[in-house]
Image: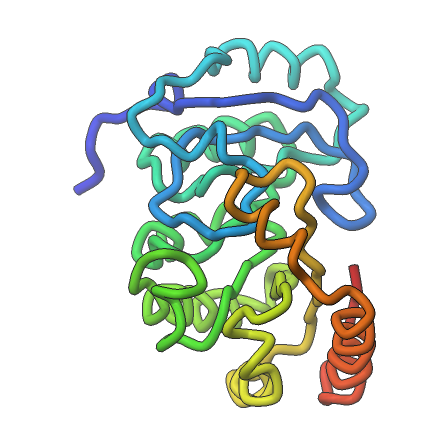
Length: 243
């Protein structure tokens, strides 16, 4: 039985009134949800990771924006942090859906059971898979790989009625850099067709990652990046995006 949590319980860390980049080919409002259970070294949203920090944007402010922009927005993207961390996300999605808007979700798959409950409400998912399941402690700070790959299977099981993109963010020496061929093979074995390869950026990350980035051999990394991009394009995905 679902708890009595409501949309107004959603801890919202930020609100972008209009975005054309958070959901391909859609104009959306983007809701940043507070808190994340993982600590990826390249995270650029470190200010909103703490799960104890309350939201700063009241949910009625979000719905007021949606009502003012009725007919101008295609939908709402929920991102984070990790949006699926909060039980209030599902009633928030229901309120958005009730306004006739589409719903997009950015998630890293840390909460597959809640994702399964939310998927009937969702039109598009951008799913970040950080590494092979056994590499998650190094890649994300916690052993959450089995949950992330379970979330991947849930999304793929629903692909006949929603769109999706599976994304990998990589940097020199990351587990997914070292095991890139195996990683691509695992995605293809699961049936992934839409893949995005993203290069980590040091800008906006914490001091530890910025210091690490200063030590990278950039000519060697550029050659390696080009190699990975070529490998991704030839791995058999139907759609590949390089960012």
